[in-house]
Amino acid sequence: MRNQRGKRVPGAAGTAGAPAVPGAAGGRGGRSPVTSRVELEHLAFELFAERGFERTTVDDIARAAGIGRRTFFRYFPSKNDVAWGAFDEELARLRADLRTYPPDVPLMDAVRQALIEFNRVEPAEIPWHRRRMQLILRTPALQAHSALRYVAWRQVLAEFIGNRIGQDQHALAPQAIAYATLGVAIAAYEQWLRHEDLELTELLDAAMRELAAGFAGTVEGPPAVREASRTGRA
Amino acid sequence: MRNQRGKRVPGAAGTAGAPAVPGAAGGRGGRSPVTSRVELEHLAFELFAERGFERTTVDDIARAAGIGRRTFFRYFPSKNDVAWGAFDEELARLRADLRTYPPDVPLMDAVRQALIEFNRVEPAEIPWHRRRMQLILRTPALQAHSALRYVAWRQVLAEFIGNRIGQDQHALAPQAIAYATLGVAIAAYEQWLRHEDLELTELLDAAMRELAAGFAGTVEGPPAVREASRTGRA
DNA sequence: CATAATATTGGCACCCAATGCCACCCGGAA
DNA sequence: TTCCGGGTGGCATTGGGTGCCAATATTATG
Image 1 (cartoon, rainbow over the protein chains, first blue to last red):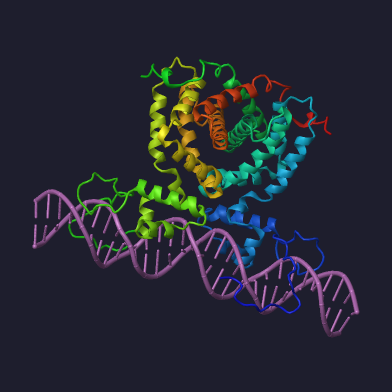
Image 2: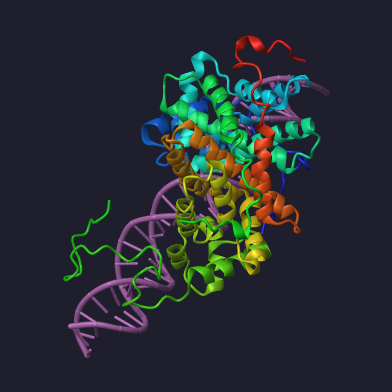
């Protein structure tokens, strides 16, 4: 049902299209972008703060930015993605950072330090970061959408862990540790959002340690639980 | 924006409307439902298997079931929710199960056993459960949507943990442990999906233990990492 | 300067999920 | 039979997301 019209501009044969995101091209040639992703992001955040995420439509954002709805979707693949900014680049940063830890740094120390480094923000940016994370963690639609970003984040971590302990990144240990670390990070973030006076860095550090303490010793209970062992119920 | 029209059926004063889900009423009175949630679920799963989740529209499902699209949304709040069946009831089961562990069972043993119990399925249901989890864990849209279910699941766990260790359920330790446990469970599930011959129960058990082993000792590294400590880069 | 190449823009049509509204249908009780 | 409670499903509408394509603006080239 596509391509019904064979009509095409005479000269243009089949040149690969423009880059997905405006401004991502080399830079020379072509019409200059009307806005930028960051600008749109800031603008959208304001609207979200005013009316809430759900009650702000893409049309609202586009209209406020003076662009067409269609153009909005060239800057962000979805409305949800506004909240995450340039996460791909952040991920690359994490990956690069993990490479800098020499092999003699114990695995979980490296993970913990990388987690802290990844979430370090300029002091001036802290209020902004708070709003962003509040939006992400408290808006159901974004809570859901974020799961997809978390997948990518965990993958970076699992790859590092897998390399370190000589297992495939999809094996149980790397995945489990990556998942647990993510959980710890989010728990720390929620603590951070609730208490304005606490340092995110310290919370992350404490959370990683507390997790270990919580597990240490207690998991070495009776052997694997199976059918028989549930006799002592209430 | 409700109740604009003062017109009401003479006799009915302010009786709360019909139950959200057909069949959830006491049973007496009214037209009998055309189908059931389980029936719809099975039917939808077949279509998903054939065409994939994304390429199956709600109209497809409704048409296949011989009901109207509007009726579909009375059985499930959203297309995504088809995949999760009656999760609320499962959650209630988990909550109840957690109450049966006497206080002398160590915390993490209880958590581990409850996790295993929660994910125990009838042998006959295993292939079905596999399909369900495959759908949930491998379909991006569902991966995202599931995050909302996980929130509820974790809350149940965090509440239990909080009670046990005398902290608020929103405190760091309960949240971190709940998050980590969820992560461990999902990692085990993904392992289970990849290896048809493995027992889910065993995987969950192993995962919980492995997590502890992975953390034990390694987290007690140098003191909290801050500015200075990142000198030994690459 | 004219023209070509290139990139961005934005309108239009369209798909699909979701929701409010409401008329209608059906089984049991009065 | 009549009434009532509940289920059904059509209709209209909102809103996110996408393919298509012509218009527009910028730079490079003849």
